[in-house]
Amino acid sequence: MASPEFKYQPIIELGADDTEYRHLTNEFVSVSEFDGKEILKVEPAALTYLAKTAIRDVSFMLRPAHLKQVAAILEDPESSENDRHVALTLLRNAEVSAQGVLPFCQDTGTAIVMGKKGQQVWTGGNDEEALSKGIYETYAKENLRYSQTAPLSMYEEKNTGTNLPAQIDLYATEGAEYKFQFLCKGGGSANKTYLYQETKALLNPERLEAFLVEKMMSLGTAACPPYHLCFVIGGTSAEANLKYVKLASTKYLDSMPTSGNALGRGFRDVELEEKILERAKECGIGAQFGGKYFALDVRIIRLPRHGASCPVGIGVSCSADRNIKAKINKDGLWVEQLEGDPARFIPDAFKNQAEAKVIELDLDRPMKEILAELTQYPVQTRLSLKGTIIVARDIAHAKLKERLDRGEGLPQYVKDHPIYYAGPAKTPKGLPSGSFGPTTAGRMDSYVEQFQAAGGSMIMLAKGNRSQQVTDACQKHGGFYLGSIGGPAAILAKDSIKKVELVEYEELGMEAIWKIEVENFPAFILVDDKGNDFFQLIRKQNVKCAK
Image (cartoon, rainbow, N blue to C red; front, side, top):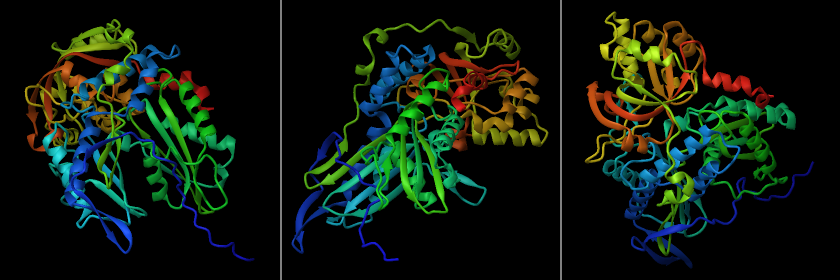
């Protein structure tokens, strides 16, 4: 059988770039000639300056297109009250964050850079080092959080104190331009990236749609919806599949063609995207607490595959949709123009709208009294918290468990106060707190039974759905899990957190145990002391979504 003639087909074909860029400077670049070709000479300082600017911008500002999608929730008559509440809070949070003091989310993420370097671009240095220096300068100067840990041994870690290392992937391409995609990926949304190794049997309409809906439903709300939801089906390897999941979540692949060809061109299936988006609207999870807007949009990419492999990847970009493009050409350095005035997206009718009536819960009284009041209300009840809360997350929980395992018991503060799963960003000068939103509750699920049996963690505050073991523990011991809106960390710091004090484990940095004083701190009852779980109720009420 004769081989077809050679034809090169890139797997990813992109259309024209319609991004609006902001010109930074024409310094650091010059043009020369070599072998009859124009050469762009770029000083390493250009990469440092570009990375510093891009990471700063994307930590405090969002894309106009994303904000427009969130704002549309407010005027959709099919939106639930909770959808609108979350959307309005996210827009108000963006307004605070855009001032450049408090970042949108307290988890200011892993810095990730993808660069495509034209063959006619000369940088004369270590590009990764120059980019890393710019990232370092932004994290060191701004009120961001250091989240990266260095392994000292297999079991011991230490926070690097710089948020380095960054993930930097550089590719060679043609031309005299250096193009970049920067993003800051928080742990909550990164943890909702999954790979499934399937087979050809999945590739029929009925099975594939059911599979995608099932996996979509499994995401829950821990990554702060409404989501930009992405699936990639196929790929030359598992790692290639997940690479394109991440790129699709940033809208980088939006200009791909919408049909394939015999040479292996990847494409977007826009028809299937619409079907899955409709199922997301029907599922009832909504923008965190029930409703229509679990997802803002869906991207589904089909790629070539080995006949024996069918990788399927899923990922999200969360409500902190921190993605920004940049480029260097002969005219200088450019970054994508993000939105500096998010308030313009809030409809006039909502700008001064008073909050709906909520239950005010005083936390500065005996725990038995607080629990006795909470038991009067059903799940999904909106609360406004005032008083003292203890802050503890992953490492702090592990250390508290070590005390229990040694027979020492829990410290009294864990018994006397609600526990907020969170880790703050740096505190700006003159403010009581840095951005201080909730972290993913599910990571602490394994501690709940033991802690509640010892009289602690009777009221927990975090984001996202939890496992059955938490519901069972709360029913057995009389506890509650309260949900906080995931994402709007800046507005919580500005309006709700009035005082922050270190309690224990200062050496853990943002993972230390803190005590905070709050007022008008919004929350929802998600798991009660009677065995009710809000998210389980939603799933039961909307079984049609999974069929």
